[in-house]
Image (cartoon, rainbow, N blue to C red; front, side, top):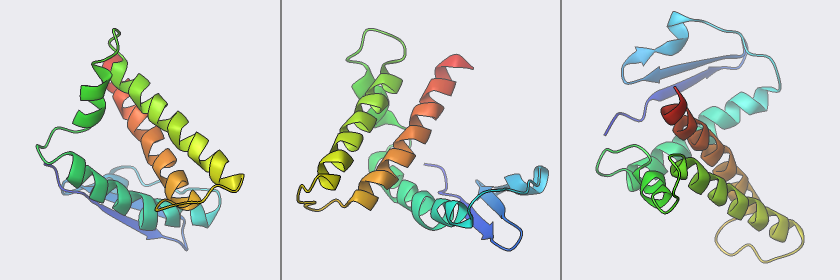
Length: 133
């Protein structure tokens, strides 16, 4: 299993420094980011740690996104893992709509579901890149 990486935000200069597997990506190609500063704080303080915790639980064997790839085998196309991720996105979107319409949240809030949607969308992109690059 790879290390979860380190995500550092320089809010004043709007720079996101990502240190993954001992390599500082931002040092290679520093980039100044525009947009709302909360976007970068959410990436650093919410989404990166959440993804790391869930990845550790799902990827105990060290195989990245094995749960998506295994479930994707039910599809007859080579992009089954991507299609499975899209199904998960649809499920989460439906949950958010239901919560906004007044459904009881149970153990997952609107924010929890939105965080999952953001992470699953990136996972879908990675899975798509793996079969199309």
